[in-house]
Length: 354
Image (cartoon, rainbow, N blue to C red; front, side, top):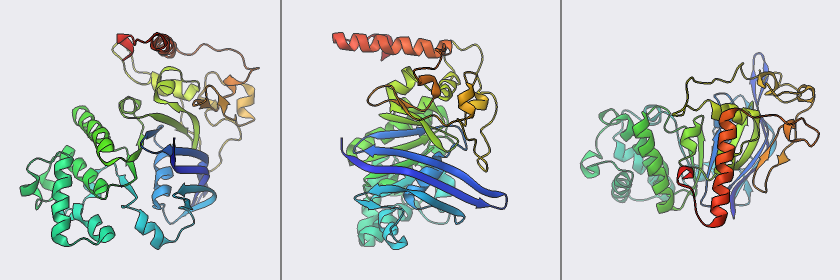
């Protein structure tokens, strides 16, 4: 598949009075044209910082000592602010987490949706407002023609998020970045927003980077998944590989934390993430990992290949590592996945694997 974005060896530090926080540590991933890549991990893992670097929206105290972000044969880390302004909101757009902080409460929503058209496409105001109305209808705002002059506070939370999506897609960007766009919404509205994004992806032919801490959301939208922990990607693969055949203990923990119909109690990963003022020299997850070995505290694991599309950075995949038994829920998922593959090879898919 054709790569539309390629992030290589990215490092991002933040200067504080206590010292430099090494927020992103040697992160590499790519986005294929037309696909959805989900980046998952708990709060503070570096997901949002990573995608904000793509948009050129890092804080003033940030520093990027190493890395490349390649888009259309140019490194977004090396272009000028004026060049970045032409890309941001036009070729690459972003949906932020809280619609009320993304929308201007003093401006009618029609003007806010039309603004990127005026800036990037130099449309006439009348033409831009006409296009804004079309896009608001596209994202499911009822009676858009009459509501285009309404203000953000006059809409529900789900509708406000749809308006934010309309602003992001009005120029039909090649890449759409969604930074936890459903976190503040209830489960029913979350499902509607996910379905909307899938529909829009087909209609405007965009590629999506979807940031979330909720693996349940990922299952419904992603093609591939990258799992982040302590500023690093520690496992990546297709959505089926990450859900049904995970190999990193942190991914096991995230999946185990998801409630199921059979769950009798909620599981929580013990401990807390490391202080990235002084990152550990070994595997950052080792202190929270019940399967940790001595080498986990001494050396950072490389990526081990599971399949051509699935890699995990854990010493448990080393040929000399002892064989460990994953949690029961992970084993159940693993068995389900291999049953699915076997049935698929025969030309059928079992009902319980759909």
